[in-house]
Amino acid sequence: MEKKISLYASVNKQLEKAAGIMGLDPDIQAILSKSTNEVRINFPVKMDDGRIEMFSGYRVQHNDILGPYKGGLRFNPSVDIDEVRALAAWMTWKCALSHIPYGGAKGGIQMDPGHYSIKELEHITRRFTYAIANNIGPEYDIPAPDMGTNAQIMAWILDTYLSSIPPHERKNCLHVVTGKPLASGGSVGRTKATGQGVVYCIQEWAKMRKFRLNKATYTIQGFGNVGSWAARLLKPQKAVLLAVEDATGAIACASGIDPDQLAVYVEKNNGVKGYPRAKAIDRETFFRTKADIFIPAALESQITEHTAPLLNVKIVAEGANGPTDPVGDSILQKRKIEIIPDILCNSGGVIVSYFEWLQNKRSESWDLEEVDGKLYKRITASFKETYETAQKYKTDARTAAYIVALSSLEKAYKERGIFP
Ligand code: GLU
Image: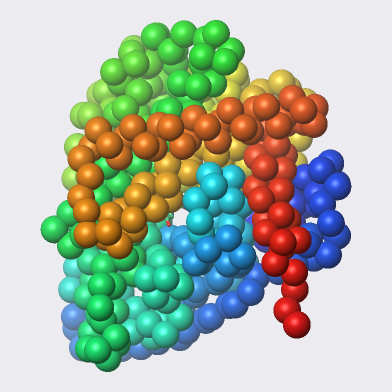
């Protein structure tokens, strides 16, 4: 993986571009170019062997003009203040684009969760939650899963949060975190939601461009929650998965890789490396694979000045947050490779988080048909709004998605004014 440049600088570059095209009020742009609160916590945890290890955890709250702060918690070695700041801002744009009443936040702990036992992971999660308990809340800032975290970790966060607040303040606090397991107040359809949203966007794009998904070929980078669900949900569409890359290596098979079988293998072996029904390829060969669709569903800054010229696809469907850096973006545009931008393409996760939050608040539980139906309606509406805005402003889809999001934020600021 290549060394990354400042991610937050990329976020502000994207913001500047959209602001210029739409004529965003410069005062509002100045407000949105900074995060509101940034918390960094260094905390000790006792390991299984009795040793103490120090960890650094972050929570950045970017903006809450449209509603409580919302966004995932990431456990990954890449986590630092610059990454979390960028991811928090993307959550603000994502929620504003989807018209869900949330602001944007993000958090994480700098570590490799694969290096720790389940017991250690629980202690790390609980110690961090205890430390940030005063900075989160069901109507204030609502964490969720992201890279390296899952429903089990959300259950520990809920439990620790409830144990950290005085009993008379507990009331109904189930919605302090989303992406929980079902028995702890989770929603059906949340685990697959981001991948499901990616597939709904690809289907909308295919309809718009009169492109047949049947026998369409695709490649995926990252086979975690987002990548594996996108692939499994593309299987009934009869699309063919040609190659997959993750942190352990890359594999390819010209006759197609079965996503369900690969998901079972990855679960057991923690990566695609060594998958027996495909051949190992190198990173460059992976990027050069000719296919119709590329789904980056791993870390940010993967499509760069080095890799963008290699891609041989029609469309990049951004399952990850920020997979394309500004130089990579302009290379793809010049090469007429379309992009379904991250804040639209991967918004299924936070949209279904919102549904989970509503169910918790109303003491309801919806069935899968209702969750999927509502997700489809919202994400296809955002898709339509984004592509209509792109036409109106004669600009690319990413800039258009930003224009939709920034217009909502600007309107709210103009209506409410700045205190005092
Ligand atoms: N981590 C996911 C994202 O980046 C989901 C956030 C959420 O559900 O709050 O969109």
